[in-house]
Length: 128
Image (cartoon, rainbow, N blue to C red; front, side, top):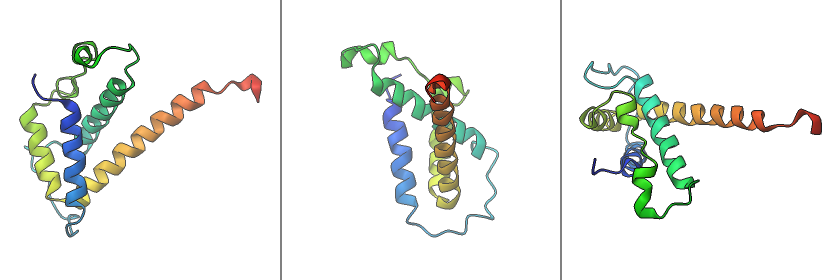
């Protein structure tokens, strides 16, 4: 694949920020069956974020030109989503900023919960 997941994630984030300036009133919008559900889109965005973070950490200390093959995360494939389904979801939710904001808040909440679990697992009960 020639597209970068980081670019897709950044595109989604920029689309969200731009669309957040639009008017609300998205509470009554029915999401078409051809568009990823809020739950599936949330999970996909969480996976994109985790993949981007893992690549940015570069725990293997690889040069930039080798990172794509060493960190072979594919959130689209792992979630059985095509690039066109992803693009359609980004386009749809960008036109409905209240829904997109809710999805993004769910992404942040999910990532925060993961961080809390990770942090609490690191706490040494003996040192308290």
